Image 1 (cartoon, rainbow, N blue to C red):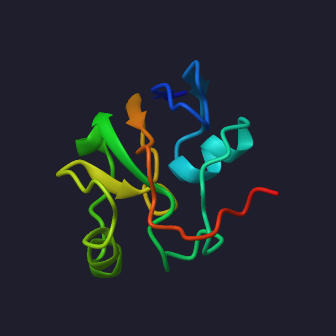
Image 2: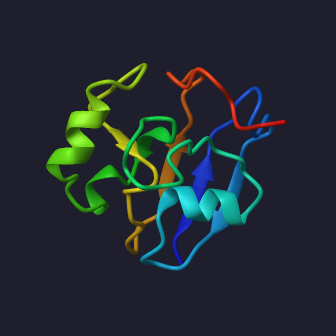
Image 3: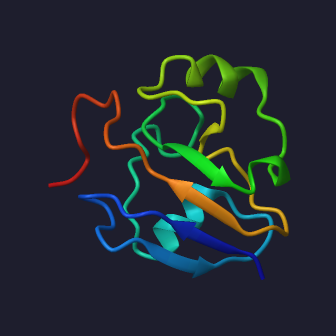
Amino acid sequence: MPKIVFLPHVEICPEGKVIEVESGVSICDAALEHGIEIEHACEKSCACTTCHVVVREGFDSLGEPDELEEDLLDKAWGLEPESRLSCQAIVDDEDLVVEIPRYTINQVSEKH
């Protein structure tokens, strides 16, 4: 099974985390299933950028983003060439190293 290494994020996972996942799951779903509370304001429907991540290693193993994802990524804070919406990035058979950006453009957090 592939592994996803989540780099430390001050609020979401301060220590970082390494998880094993099944191929075919999105990075967002994998994170949520393992207690990494990544933002996903549109409920993973590819309608916002709150689940934006930067794939530091393994980027080429992910499928190509579609036009809608690319258009949304243009609005993401801290966009980089290896940026993806984690709700749309499907894990294949390679390990990934993922960074959750420090900020999102979400004006209201879902945390209570």
